[in-house]
Image (cartoon, rainbow, N blue to C red; front, side, top):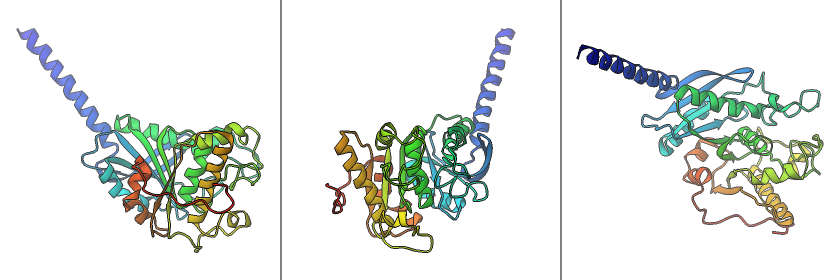
Length: 306
C-alpha cells in the first residue's frame, strides 16, 4: 500500500511538472501585449506580440510593418484582429539599418552589389524561422496567416512569389508598388533581370498559385509623402489602389492566357485611404484573411482584355 501511495505521489509530481512546463512555455509569449527577442536564422529580431486571454493556440497572425518600421504600433492596431479572430498577433521589426528597402520591401533577393543572394539569405526566409520559434515558445502548432500594409504589403506580395512560408493566407494591404507577373519589367516591379532560376514560367505559375489576397483601400488612390514616384512604379498606376488593381488584372489575364490556376483574392475596403489601422479594423479584413464571399469585384481597366 505504501509503495502504491509513493508511486501515486510520484505520478502526481510528474503531472504537476508537465503542467508547469506547459505554463512556462505559454509564458514565453505572455497574455496581453509583450516585447520579445526572437532568433530567426542568423539574426535576432525584436518581436511585438499580443496574446488574447482566450487564445486556444489554433491561429497566429504575423503583421508586417510599413516603411516607418513601427512594429509596436502595428501590433497595437492589430489587437482587434487578435481578439476578433482568436489569433496570436506577432509583429516582427525589421530595422532599416539591417534591412533597408533592398532587404525588406524586396526581400534581399539581390545583394547590395546586385548579385543574386542564396535563398538562405533572403529576408523572406526569416518568416518560417520566426513561426517555428514562436510555435516552440508556445508549445502550439498554430496555423499561420500573414498580413502586411504599405511597405509590409510590398514584402508580402514579393514573398508570395519566391518563398512558401506555409501560411494559410498572405494578405498584402495597400502595397506601394507591386510585382507584376512578367519578365518584361525589371525586378521590384516585375521579374526582369533576375537569374533564370527565379524568373521563368514555373516561377510565374507558382506566384499565381500562392494563397495571396490583395486587400485594397479604394481611397488610397493618390500620392503622398512616401509614394514611389519612380518611372517603373508610375507605370503601374497613379495610386496604390490603381497599382493593386493592375496587379490583379495582369494576373487574371496571364492565368487565362496560359490556362493556369490563380488562387488570389481581391478584397476592397471602400473609402479607406492609406491607413493600416482602418484597414485592420474594417469588416472586409475578415474577408481578406478568411475568404468570406465578396459581393462585388472591381471592373477590369481598359487594355487588359478582361
